[in-house]
Image 1 (cartoon, rainbow, N blue to C red):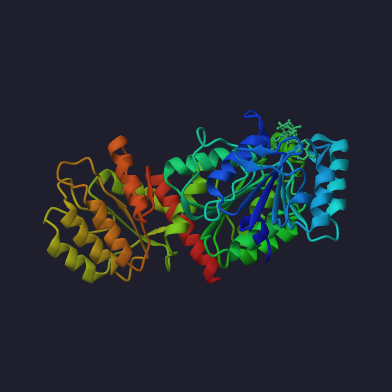
Image 2 (image 1 turned 90 degrees about the vertical axis):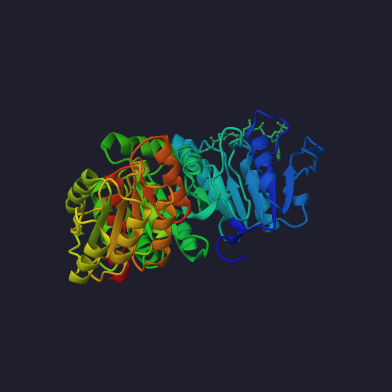
Length: 456
Ligand code: COA
């Protein structure tokens, strides 16, 4: 198989250490895999004949053809099974087991042993000390997280790689509740063999991945990472959230996944140079991922603001300037057209205030004019859905203009449950929507920055 396809699109999968005991990882992995994965699935356990109705094999040696082995065994048993995989020519092995370099000298020795076993062979390892893989398209699911507690996100265009399994999995859970879709998720733990660089290159070539998000504590080879990232971003946007920024955080990272976090300042500068978009918070990570998944970057940084809530026009204008973007100056022609379609008491300059009694028709006319204005590169629209006159169908109006426009449109609406429901509708229709002006503007800034990265 090509590249890392053996991990993500295997024809057959063995769960080695599949257990009959509901309380064990080997039980959960088999159970979740069985729900989604449609290829050949083989539990391996020398002490059982059948598990969950599936024929059980004493060893991987007894399975005819095998692409991926998921190992959920104690570390003492892992070398034996890994050697069997190598002898059999199994190309992909995910090792969930922990107790390696993250625990000190003895653990490091054990991890070296695993590296030596696969040296010179065609067998590759993801892990050790990881959750492994979730691929929403192929159904490969090695996460030991029962669905009753953890909903998998739907299929989408975001791929997410993470050094931390715990953090990664909670984010996946959160993504599903936010309606964000995933292509591939990889928790790669100690990077014993497959490292983040290789994952980035693979995801860059994956046609289902439109944006890559990476949670990083420390990288395996800084120079190489920046080189690879610099290449990847020309084709696929890359959003990074770097943890271990402080001395204490960096020390915690080293005992978590055995990584050397290094000085944050160096990372920060290197990310910028490579064209990587750095998020400063967990929400920020996916705010950026969402906008980069849905929209193409604008040609420039001249932003139009459209609202029926004057106060929001002022707040967003401040934020646009603070974030280094510019407020567009509408063309004469646009101003003339706006004057002819809006009431005499409306303000026809940027930020465009459609006034508190605006309805969806007013929005449609105004957005249509600005979508065609050559002086406007991107639009932030803030519908105040709470007003009596603004129909919820304004969501369809915005989505319709977004489909026709050759420039990005981002939405923002602040409020309670009613508003959140409509924001979710906007997201579903491909208009990235945010609950606060600041988040919406940062998303636009990321899009503008990414446009520069691609254009440079
Ligand atoms: N081949 C296949 N199965 C074997 C075997 C072999 N050679 N030897 C034993 N087994 C079976 C066991 O009998 C058991 O099945 P059973 O429960 O039906 O009897 C099953 O494999 C699991 O082995 P067990 O010894 O019970 O392991 P465990 O579940 O207690 O622990 C790990 C294994 C991997 C879960 C544990 O070592 C570990 O690392 N836990 C932490 C994982 C983690 O947090 N990873 C990082 C996430 S971010």
